[in-house]
Image (cartoon, rainbow, N blue to C red; front, side):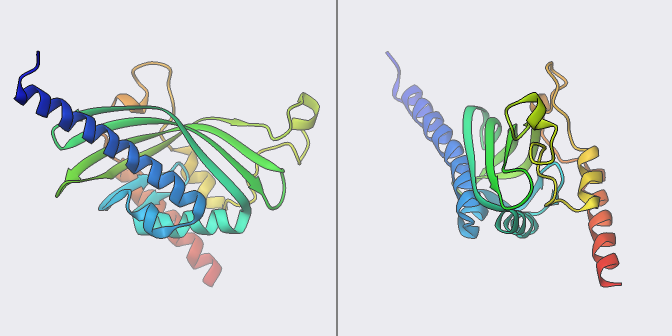
Amino acid sequence: MMTLEEMQEKLTYLMDRQEILDVVNRYCRGVDRLDREMVMSAYHEDAIDDHNMFVGSPDEFWSWVRKMHSENHSATQHMIGNHLAWIDGDVAHCETYLSYSGMNKTGAPFSAIGGRYIDRMEKRKGKWGIVAREYIVDWVAPSINTVEGSKTPEGGANYDCLQPFEFKVAETAPQPSRDRLDPSYRRPLEIDPDRISNYKALSGAAKDAVGA
């Protein structure tokens, strides 16, 4: 039989687990509904999101993701599956499997991506939030389910919504690995400073070129 202290520890763990999962759920719903307040509620203010082709703060991420989805997709669904959290006091490292699907306004009829959110979260003043996130792309599916169809322009992935510099950012993004070299094993999870500075430099140059 558990002691009162053991019961309290178990209850705290279960509450933390649920609140951590709620963070991921709020993020997914917020992006699909284009709800800024809900998306921002998933992050602490000083967080950094390395989203494969984007790297920046929550505010910067919201501006980027809202523009991309509202201009290029008529509907999106971020469906989460397997979810693990390793909790150590007020710090948690989490891995959440993601199935993304989006109806494209132009080009390929839809996009389908399998990936994972690798998060380091912290509980501050009783509130769990993301402080570091890496979005890992495990696979991108062809948009037509035949070999012949997938080779057509309509069957390929929809990259029309990306700017040229974003392809360069994605080239150096963290990559999945079917062993302990996978990003999900890193402790503590920290975003590569070179990724942050590289994104700022490339995105800044792209803006300057447009304004020239």
